[in-house]
Length: 95
Image (cartoon, rainbow, N blue to C red):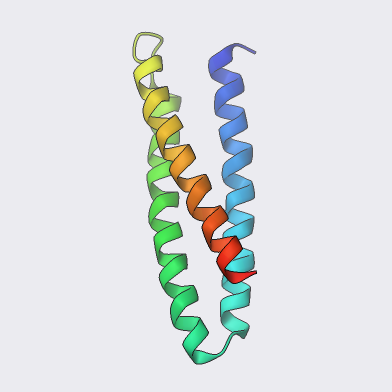
């Protein structure tokens, strides 16, 4: 596997882990009080937005040729860090 393949595979695994975390938060939201559900829903909406952005970066990476790889990876790295931070904030807030 070359570096591009390794990076894409790592990102794919990470995205699956994030999806699991979001699902756990959704389950907690369903069991929470009405007031808490409002906060959970806001946080989940933000996470889904970031997840969509990350998915778009993932798709760009899959399509990127060697010449564009570095630029596309820079965007993916930024989205990855932002999404990871958002997940961690949500988990900290609601655990």
